[in-house]
Length: 227
Length: 57
Length: 149
Image (cartoon, rainbow over all chains, first blue to last red; front, top):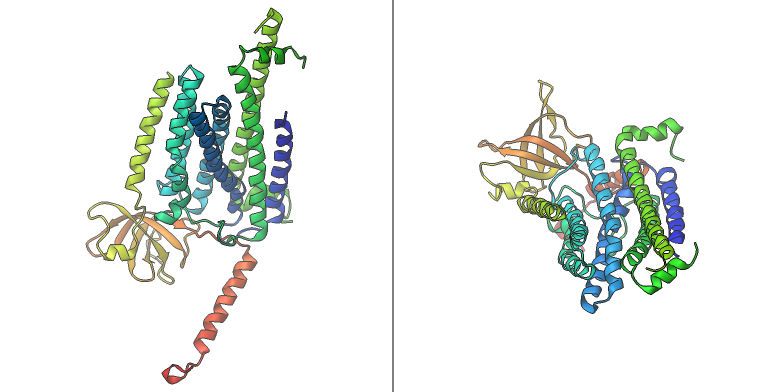
């Protein structure tokens, strides 16, 4: 069972990331200590988008090749993806109030991230509403794949439209516009969240597999092995 | 080190509500997810164990 | 019950998407307003920079006047209320309100828009000094008649 090991890694990276974020990274000249929300907000937002893409990928594979495990993997990822989306929105709101002066605006970045949360909820609700697992997987896959277009919208929203949310501080094509220690804290937390996501996805996939296949011989044999 | 003492740390430059409100909810939700997953795992194992005792799946 | 939940989500998503489309142009720049691209007769948002030296607090203690600029055009703004902490001259601002016939924008809400740079105060100080030095250097540079070189 790999999940606990990823859990340990997650805890280690998050501890290191938080240490860097609070005790090594300096304060910000503009936002003061309020900016330290960044060490959760940005990694959570990255995870919210990344997990959706992975979920949609597995859902798509399951749809195309009729493989059972792919669909189960997609279902295993959804709750954690929704969690990080909510965290991104929640921490973003708490960060917006003291800096922008508002808890919320309907600009393109915030609105598209909220839509992402609805996509995750819709995926989970749809699968819960359909009894037959293969049909549930297929329906969920169609929704997940349709929603993939939202991911580039979220990412490029600050470039394509006028938004209150500022542009990217970190990109693949240019140097980060933040102090090195701040950037390091953010990246370490991102790895911590990533390992956490792997751990929860694996643990949840295990539950899903056992639940769905409980009528089979191999699961009966598995249950026979004493814990 | 950034802080004059623990009271400075908790005060977060006056932004305590926003910073700790963010971190506390994040931690709480992640812990809740882990606990719910653990309960789900325990539940399915319990069910399988009972099925085994009854002599079949 | 789950079907009801899915339906509620669909309705919520539809409402969100409609808010999205309305706010796709989240704010207009002063240049866009000068070009008559901003909506007439209803509230909209103006975005730009707070023009340095333009902030004036009125004698009543509540009203403040300032100018929003995009370096090409500018719009005078009047606002009654609390300004956000990060409202600064020379920094980004997004304000919601109505444009009056006299060309003044009467704001009901003022939000600060900050940039994507994060640095400690010492780095910001160093950047400011470096900028001042380069401005001074440009001012004292002597360029020969006819362009030289």
